Amino acid sequence: METPFNFNPELCRNESEVESKLIVSYLLPRLGYSPDTWHQEVTFSSIRLDFLAFATQAIPFVLDANSPLTVVMEAKHPNQNLDRHWRKIRRYLTNLHVKYGLLTNGKDVRIYERVGEEIQLVFQCPGREVDSKIEEIKALIGKDNLKLTQSDSHPLNVRSGNPVQRESSNQRQQKMKIIAVYHNKGGVGKTTTVVNLAATFSKKGKRVLAIDMDSQANTTFGTGLIKFDDEELDDIKDCNILQVLQSEEFYPISEVARTSAFNTPEVDVVPSHIDLMQYESELNQLDYSRLILLDKLKEAATQYDIVLIDTPPALNLYASIALITADYVLIPSDLKPFANQGLKNVKEFIKKVDAFRRQINKEPLEILGVLACNISTNAAFVKSTFKKRREAITTRYGLPVMENVIYTRDVLAKCSEATQNVGELEIANPKSVLELEPDSQAAQEFEALAEEVLQKIGMDA
Image (cartoon, one colour):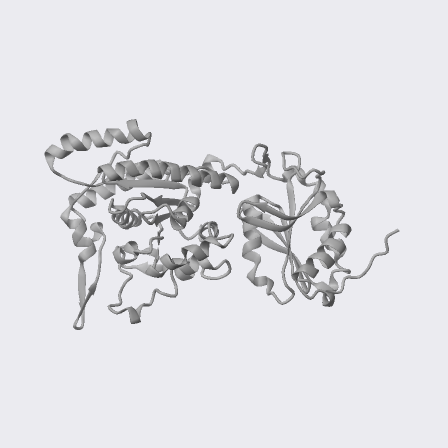
């Protein structure tokens, strides 16, 4: 008969010893998990779990409809503050639809429970008290107790081996909608679309957040957040989308988003910065970089109705993050030959992104359509060439086309070039087209486009 021993947190000098002495030698056996029901260093796409335990599971390691994910256990170095790691546990539980997560550094033991898209701390004790609290821990995450509640678990996708939670149409109707505005060719009107759609949605009573994911920072300029005339006065450098993507624990959306006065009502904007281009390689090395924006927007889900993401004209990490995060994609295009040829790249890029989304149990991107943008108003062009180019989007590239069109208008250039005098300085003071010339044809075009988009995403009520 095995002789039980008391756990002593002072014997854990590093993360490896927290794993071996507390989790493997102490907790798992006492909670009823035999070696065939727990696995170490399990990877799901970019998620790497220290330990994953099952209420019922047999060797070989198979994930199917009869083996629901039950408990994630994460070990940290004894000197690590667990307050800095709860976001990671939250991501693991919500993305994999796991019910419970145990987080410990040996000195502190915490258990979190997933409730919908949030997690709650349901148990905490010092490591030195784990012996006296073991029955409480067993009541929460013990193998036998969890067997009884397996019927409440989310079903697994048998083909992919990952859990899938489907939303009802009513749930989808109510949640915050995220739209990426993307084309891999520059100069097709992405920023003009983002800035003026955000303004139009805001005037229609929606709570809007615009996120600039392009190091050129055109949306940041276009919404009037660049108020400095000298780089030494740059007040955006240390608090922009780069810091959001670099940190799991810090820089939540609520701290980084700035209120922009380019429109009334105001629109919140997460600014970008030219420094973003320097850090793509570094961010590529982080296992959470592709999901951090998605996680942080979940935390801000009650603050906004619509999020618009301006993307770089590239097939790079930042474009990938935007498309992974979004629910929908809108593709502005001037329909010129290179832009049209680029649609092949756009389709292939979305296909690759959808493959990743399947791994994190996210529905495929919904393509709202190709938006004809920056289109000449020349009557002969509109009647002949433009009509043929627009028809080719569907026949040649198999993509839907938005009904509304954004034409090239002088007022749109005036919006971005507006300035104001502050003392002896003339500084940029851009306005939305609905703010600068609300009765213009351009303003009417964006109002019609906004109505079409709202109808497509189910927010036209």
